[in-house]
Image 1 (cartoon, one colour):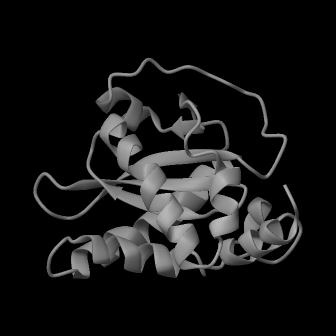
Image 2: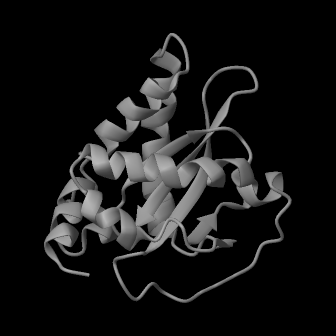
Length: 171
């Protein structure tokens, strides 16, 4: 599993930044971008993972990338199963070894920054931070409209539509 973390996350985890400028060559397993988001609570943070190229969002409570990576595969698999994509879980290779690199796509980071505003707003509106809040965020983000280079020539794309296309392609 390829993780591309922001500099801030790498510094918190005390991981030396390693560049890997190679582009992904297949939609699955793809790569996951990770960045820190604030919960708006004292000492509270979460890590937002976004899959390239589907733009699927998964959110895990915590500030430590190492701890989040322990919870991330089960949360991501649960999200895929919740939307009927159980057949894709194995193709995402969540159980493979984890390689962590620096980010290399400004367009994905810019989309993540836009998503961050919504995620932080949801955290601010929540009475208490429970896993149901994470599920609600992920449920809305899977249907979010995303434009720009990521949409690959279309006006916009939705993560759920990309997943449907991948589910129809035999891997």
